[in-house]
Figure 1: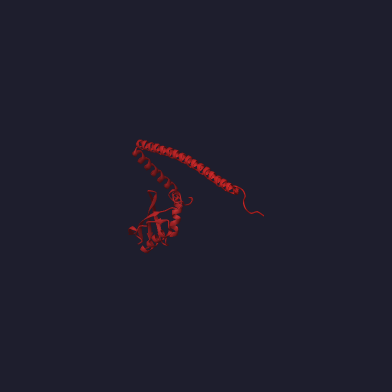
Figure 2 (figure 1 turned 60 degrees about the vertical axis):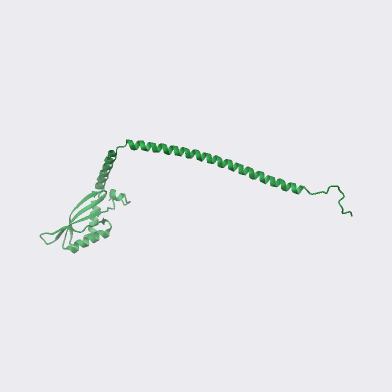
Length: 198
């Protein structure tokens, strides 16, 4: 058997190399197409976002101009007057929704034995109920106990010390107390999320 190559040009298997080159070319073409489409897409998105930003900036500028025009047309005295009217309306609502039953129920649970309340004068200041309470007690200890119970109830804050203390004909102490009342119902309490008025 003859093992020498008698051809003038040796035979090489070029088909495998051609397939590899075609595959490599296909990968390069696909990658190039992908990159070109992504660049075009990003460029389009960038253009759209630039246009949207320009529109938003123009809108913001127009709104700033409009706000400046409105500010120049508004009279500060009218704003102060409207604010005062709103405060007065809120005070009227607070007075209307004030629950005397709730207040006296609170007093009933905190009042010591042998002590009584002779007068209660509520006053609303900036949405807060200020109470002036006149009590009659056997002694200073009862008044101190009453004040402690008011503070512990959570419905009364800023319990001031007894003022204008004097004795009546029966030897009992008459004292005036200033307290801040936080009702669980009504307009003022409604701002803090309390319950429904009974």
